Length: 313
Image (cartoon, rainbow, N blue to C red; front, side, top):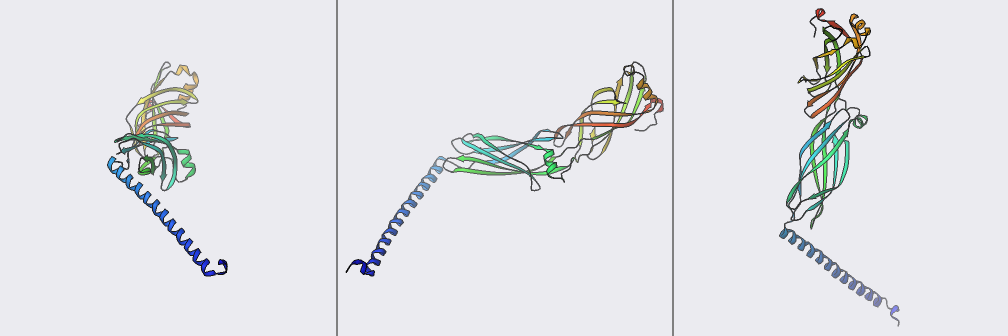
């Protein structure tokens, strides 16, 4: 009788072959597991003997080197410490700035440098916020407001033995969305009339529409009466403009009426005229120094002689 005619013999041969294959797979798997365990054990011993460890990082400072009506440049100082006996590369830096959970800006800084062995390095992360982009995306963010932000940073480093690591960081703060002050020339008070020289005082009213104080350092301006520029100047002052408040200033100005012909004298005799004023104010704020423009076109003001002073500010 052929072996194929005996089902019991065939089944026994199949079972024996399957059992031998399973034994081989178990032996192979056990060998690989032993190799992995051995490598891991050796790695841990080397790590412990040589002193490899995970780097640490912290956001130590936030600086705003430049801020104006259009953008804010922010620099985050991140201190990274390397406890290992060899330098480690800082592969990538991923950053994200949010306000109330909404993305303001994000970016990637590749190949960010190397952290020296047993040392610390301050890594600077520069970020630029473009205000038009923010205001166009989120209608509720208004000029003059202060918005909260959260910066999230992932530092990706490559540590020998340990491998590639991601160090997450987070820092909260506030950033302003500046708004230019409103300016009005309430009146022009003439102190001295002369064809060669006329001395006057501009009575300015400035409204600070920001949710933060402005401390004036310098004001530069040029003023036009009836489309004629009568002068420009710089004024160094230490006036404080309260947040959402109105402040008044008096600025001296001198000009030569003969340079403007009869039109200026006709305007003065009329005791009222249209004006324009343009300039800038250099101010200190809780967020750093700013240079903000001031301007008013098509305004109307009063012209007053010294003896006509009514005592108004």
